[in-house]
Length: 467
Image (cartoon, rainbow, N blue to C red; front, side, top):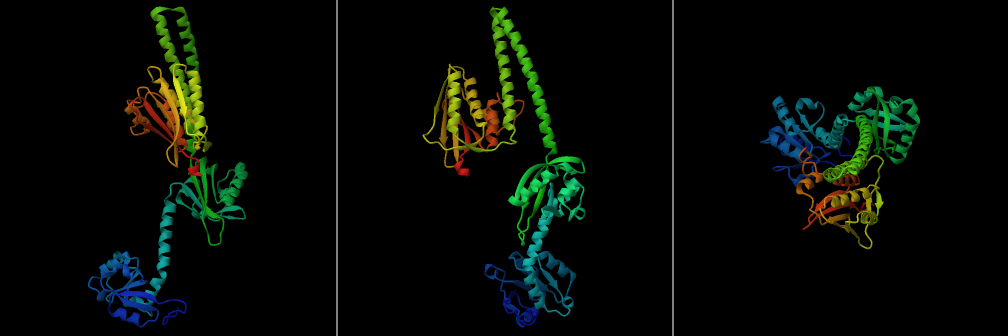
């Protein structure tokens, strides 16, 4: 575009102004299409490319600047006096550029207006870039901006956390292979496999071991590709340190196994002593031996439930897949009906129930709820297990009984409405097993209302709705 005429393919810049000597310059420049603005910038003025505010041509120039900035229009301020206080006020109000006669040199106000209008998109992009850089550097996890060159992930940039974790700042890492910097030699082939998957799929999640300033540590690695003009294989590699979590999990597993082994041994010994006591005594002593036997069996049940909980809360390697909830519920019903002669356990389901997203632990969850109903009934329990579609997204496995019901206090604890404390913790583990199994497959444990007894709903996502 020439300084004295609009380019052949470029329309003139639509400039709003409030009058003043500087506005006369716009009318004489073919690159500009000036229009006087009366009052505040409103929606009808949203098609402006730029706003010129002549400080001496407006009664409240700072307000005019702020209104233009608020409307998203670049604002050029011309101040014939060139006062520092005015420059500060204009900047605070949102001026894109503050111009004085001394600063123009061989340029005109029209030149500055045209430049401000042309740079507006670039300025917005620059602002976005600055915001992204702040976010990139502020992330607590190590992040690399990398590009695959000849199948090698080459560093283009790293955030501050990367330097803290791995010991390489942006200048040291730029242009280097991520694998050369971080991958232990014996894991080189694994790293190449991960690279191939990342390039092919555009995304990847892996658990990896990498060299850091604190020795080798375990990370959850994520690769996220982003589009580039040349359609290159460029993206972000994110390293989330899970070393402490992995160590804690391993320690808990060892502790739980040792405790279970010791508890099993103690239970076996107690059973032997109690059985011997029952065989060699009668009367009150024999009755107390039977009570002791019941307590020992309760401890044994708790130990088994603790094992179930350990497995239920361990989500590593577990995936959801379509499961027929009716088949699972009916299997639980038949087992309890066969093994519990003093109870009635019934099953009902629609002719063609929807499949649900779950895993192999669903049967354990249903079983735990049924066990809870049978255990807390003082008489001859009746338990009904049913499969009920809720809507086109959810399906329920419903366990209803005619027992005393689940106390409101315990319902609130298990559902998470009340915190677990020494006083509020529930009386058993069965409902907790069910809740954690369901949470791991994005389901819910819900408590319904019944005139007599309890209603527990194991709510699952329908497989068809998530396809």
